[in-house]
Image 1 (cartoon, one colour):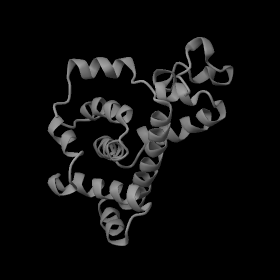
Image 2 (cartoon, rainbow, N blue to C red):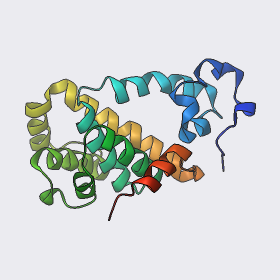
Image 3 (cartoon, one colour):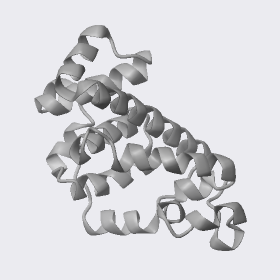
Length: 179
């Protein structure tokens, strides 16, 4: 098991990242055991999380569906909090755990894309065409990159039993997601 690194154990090679998002998340504190990986990861994370063509709501829908499909509680809980900040209602968030047939059309399209990538490691042509029409080529590529990025994070948090961050625990204690 790799525990999140404390400030006292923080690698000198990553000193410039400790006070950024990297130092605030336990998943990144686990990744800090490999400074070169985390250093490279931070640039991709910036694009996937903040410069993504999907926009804030869609990216949260995609991430929540990935977290659900991969049973990654750490990512699910984080993105319940972030999804709310992006404008997702609790009822909308809850639907992301169910059948795509029971979701709003835009969410259903994204959920079907996540499901295809998780199940088949590809977007079937008809789904790809529908996504391209709605999101454009850049949006489709960002969707695929987001699923891959959060799949890797799910592997990390589940492999190492990464503990949920205190701020997320507090936010969910104050406002739990009703099931």
